[in-house]
Amino acid sequence: MLYSTVITAIVSIGLALSYLIISRKAHRSGIVVLLYHRLCPQAEWELLTGAERNFCCPVERFEEHLRFMLADGYRFLSLTELHLWLDNPPARSEKLAVLTFDDGSSSVYEHAVNITEALSIPAAVFITSDPDAWVHEHQPRLTAAQILELTNRGFDIGAHGVSHHGLNEMPEPKLRWELDACRQTLEGIIDAPVIDLAIPLGFYTTHVLERAAEHGYRLVFTSKPGRVQHDTHPNEIPRFTIEGQMTSNELQRLLSPLGIVARKLIASIKRLPPALLGENRWMPLRQQLFESRLGPYLHSRALLRMLGTMTAICFLLLTWLIARAF
Ligand SMILES: [Zn+2]
Image (cartoon, rainbow, N blue to C red; front, top):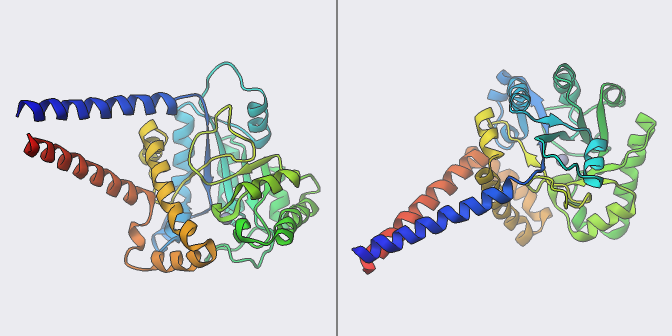
């Protein structure tokens, strides 16, 4: 009995020390980059099913998130300020964030810009340039006039591919064409250089990042979770995907040291199926999964709960096994 108590105490101290080490690392100064996809009114969101409930955020909740971040002391940066921060990291530590949208849903124009303007928050939208490319259901895409107005109202415009397909599975000429053609279309609309890119679908390889740099992109955003640190490469900027289900309290927990570690763990689990099957085979399967009975549980909040429960069960099982052994 004495042995089991000692061993359980050692395991607990080990876990506590690991948490402290992780906390120290996660608390290093760094920038939080938020990734949203589209917004819709709460009543409309209630009717959504499958993956759309993850990718669409109720407008009211989006505003709550931003107000929470501001109240918590975060200052929002534009993409140029983020680039300058990476070039010349300031000595003093400050809570910093960047707000981004992927895909180019017209809801960015219809709902987001009024809120960001009212709160004086700069933002960026990464746009898939082919208006007929399959990006999402239910919502139309930004028109050229809306894109132009967004730039006049403080939005940075970035590229998000032409076809919204995984860049990593494309033949070389197609990859190079996607990187150039998307930018050229957007530059034709806003009459200014487009120099930042967000990877469509989040699938990429070192080769894709190298090509993006060769094609003149300044910052390349991924959807790997994590804070931007001083040593983060500008061609691989991590972001936190914000799902429609996430409350402000959950956002706060997500940005805590343990929340970041849990998110990283979930992200590595989520990367396994496309890595094993290839993105082209995985994406239709993923769609079916979201539409199945499992769909409502395939978002980070539910997955985090499952992860927490499994960790607790494993810990109790370990303690029980040790107690039995001695
Ligand atoms: Zn996208």
